[in-house]
Image 1 (cartoon, one colour):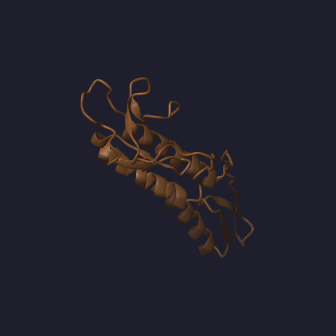
Image 2 (cartoon, one colour; image 1 turned 60 degrees about the vertical axis):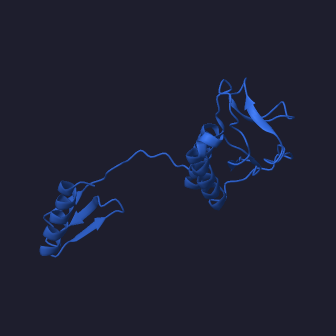
Length: 160
């Protein structure tokens, strides 16, 4: 609420109080009604706000999950045209299934962000999801997949 609105409500409330009246103010600070004991002044003000009822916890989970998926994608992105190991297993992240996977070594900052978001997502009681299978360990061979341009297990063709 802006300063002018607060001042207006304060003036209404204090003016009514000075006359021995009563002011009713809702949660948002809007004056709903005022009455004067002298019977000369009655003010009814109603403010209607259209709001959409949502589940804040669900919204938070969706927001965290979207941010986590973006961070996972950024952390695991690699360039198959670079002739150097990029997916060595030295940099790891956790996916929405809770499984550890390999991130590209050059994306350590994105990997840290993904780990932080994963922790926040789990602490908010949003996940992880159980999907019944995890990719091979980061200790197994991973490479930069030319089709997805992401780190992928050498022996797992359907990742990510």
